[in-house]
Image (cartoon, rainbow, N blue to C red; front, side):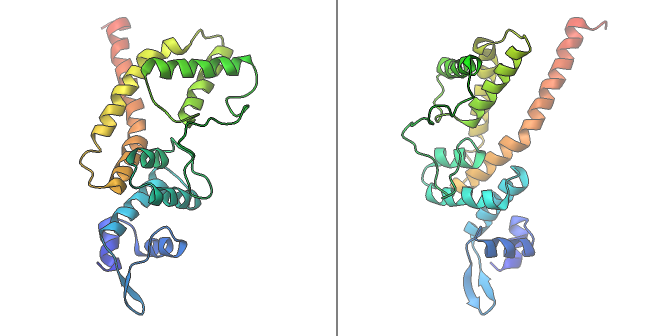
Length: 225
């Protein structure tokens, strides 16, 4: 297809496509004349993934380039590819994903110094063990859970990993639903794009649904009719 058709199919403007070509995010098309080239379905899928990473996930062009470099190396490993595009796994500046041998970060690279930080780190490890979850070493999401528990304890709220188990069970069901919706995607790039859209775009709606449900159950329990 010509670049005009590529723009129409992908939803990306021609000037933006040319920018991605110059910056190396999008592979060059097949030359057909001095200033013309043809593009194929791989370019369409690549553009849609770029658009989701920049426009939906909010990555910079530089960060997107790093993610795409890693994606190019890992297209045969859908699990690792999804971790890269969703930010569950960090991408080194070389464009290579981190080691997969289970190596942990150096000592002191966790939630920070002090007994409280160690306690919440142990809580997160206990929670993932209770759920039977297999995760990469020190994933960013675990850091968020640890920081949340540490903040709640600092505010005097008696909350530990056991209190999170019912929520983790709901999250487990939601994750299954997310991955079920990737079945129809035809190839790894389409799966990666859909995973970004489902994860990032749905998160505000999921929070809003929780608020609606809270209002409903509050009315049932405490409302005066």
